[in-house]
Length: 357
Image: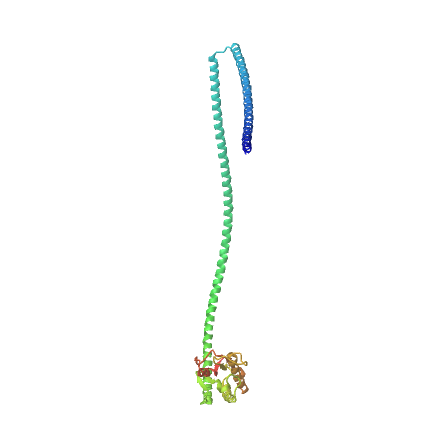
């Protein structure tokens, strides 16, 4: 066990040494890198020093050249002084003359510029004046042309106004003539209307006379007959007197009554002059109950069929067909608006009325 402990100790020491060796290697590598960096900086500094030395040498050369040129210039100035023995006063006088000449030259230039500016302004004014003169001449020309055109238009309008006045005078004369003719026609129409009204009144009075005879004779024929009554200017037959319920075929009793009426109508028709346009209108009426069988589609067909049946029977018994008219009113003109069997019976009817066309 002692050997094992020693081995462990040796191993631990060896590991520590290995670790220290590794650390030393890292430090050596870092030191080498730092040395490389310092060497690079040293090289840069050396190069900068070389450049500075070169610049100093150039400066020294330039300074020597400048000194040489100064000495040469001093020699030249001395030679000039010996060759041209002119005093300082003469030089200042010449400088003053040159300054004066320069001032005169600048004044002349300023005067030249001012004169040039005035000439340019005068040219601009002359050009503007010429443009205004041209515009004025153009406007005058246009106004002259417009005046000529306006005078021509005035002359044309004057002629047109004269023509219109002539047309107006002719229309006024025609209107006066038309008004006179209209008054005459109105008078004629008034006379014709009066004559027509008188003629119509005469015809109405004449028809009224025959209507009275018609009523009187029919009243005597239909007196005391059940199911027949006089309502105003009409003879009213209850449908049951002439037709079975819901049917348009006249019963035997109904045919007897229609034949008796036809005889009376023929007697009256023989007495009415041909110029009286009389009509015996046969009106069929139904109640509001709907038709419930297929012979008639509605109360319109039923009421019309019954009126036509009466008209046909009158024609068969000698009444002139051109003085008869059959009309159907369905259930839209009831005598009694109630919804009772008695009201329905009153509303189912045939009416005879003597009237004009």
